[in-house]
Length: 169
Image (cartoon, rainbow, N blue to C red; front, side, top):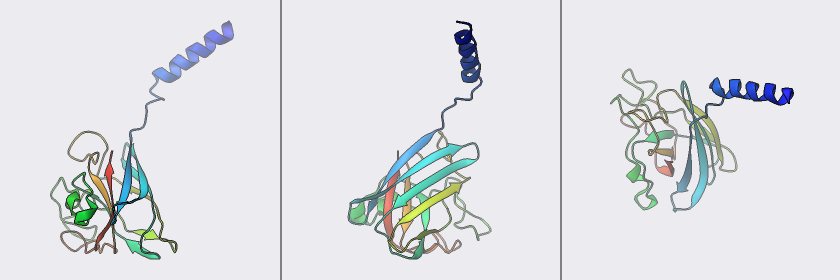
């Protein structure tokens, strides 16, 4: 009985300390140019930003591709995913890490697609959140482009066609 009481107090102290605060997460399913599902992403909120973990197949093998948050939460493959709009940019900054007036909140580093055409990424973005507010990407989209982002051309880094799009839920 005493052991159970001690365990109950220990559990109450642990749970009451905030140690069980749940992480905020979101998911997204990538849709390719033909409308088929080609991958998934999990987004995890942290105190400093959002971690994006993604795996997407059917991409051009052996090359770097642009990877961004886009402003709209629609991925219409029949329009070449143009329905996703431009890069997520709530502060109205210039595009790119190399731009004096940038980057957009939705800018992220290029990602590498392996020899089998699979992108496996872990990208961290300090400019966005999953909470409510201007920088929240919930309900927005993730985009994979056909070429690499040059990190400076306006308005989107000349990253090429939109190959795969995912609405963040």
